[in-house]
Length: 308
Image (tube, rainbow, N blue to C red):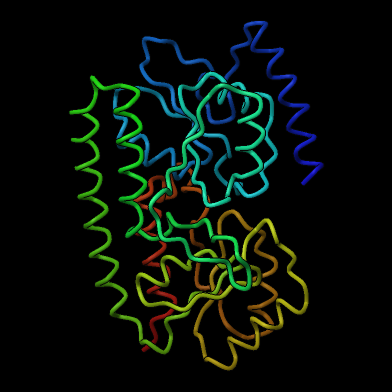
């Protein structure tokens, strides 16, 4: 962690220098770093899933950028100078909270005037197995998404009261989509035999989803910042698969697949597909939005765990 913070502080110093000199390069996500006043509110989010939620509410009244590139995970992402410049130029920096970006929040808090706002406020946190800290992956259950949307709406209205009607209308439309998704997932899950309702992936990230839709969940490790993939962790999962007769395991788009491939090979349980956890999908994936990624995840779980 000390190495990560030191790297960020070096990037931070560079970014401050570039900002002072009027630097205005494009970031990795293709968005211009410095939004002009005529563009409305300029929001930076920590990662792409939050950015999509924000865009649904913000609509045409501003611009949304995010820090962690698609394909990478936010737990220990090492920022580059452009990242800090984007945060420093933003009207607000939206994060998930629940400890996910804790070290990044702390550094930004000490080095920028941009307000950091947590979007998971109100969620009933589930602890990591065997630990006191919360599992941060609350967004992976659509039943929690309304907390995120409400926090976005209320904060945007505070910053832009003239946009209240538009923000509330956008949020209402988005919440209707989320409610439809939730009902659809409930219906799809009914196709899985209760004995097979266990989600096994590398990072045990679907606890909220599991609690809300009736799944047990297992992972090789609890959270990616604790990633180890030791032989003991791998063997534990193999034993669970054999003992419980779980028909499939899954891999995440932002996690090294070799650990789960080892589990699959040694348990004779197939990898039934990829799921999205810490990022939406790339262009053309069919999972470029929050709604699409969660629909994809549910379909993948149902297809993999349903047996004739």
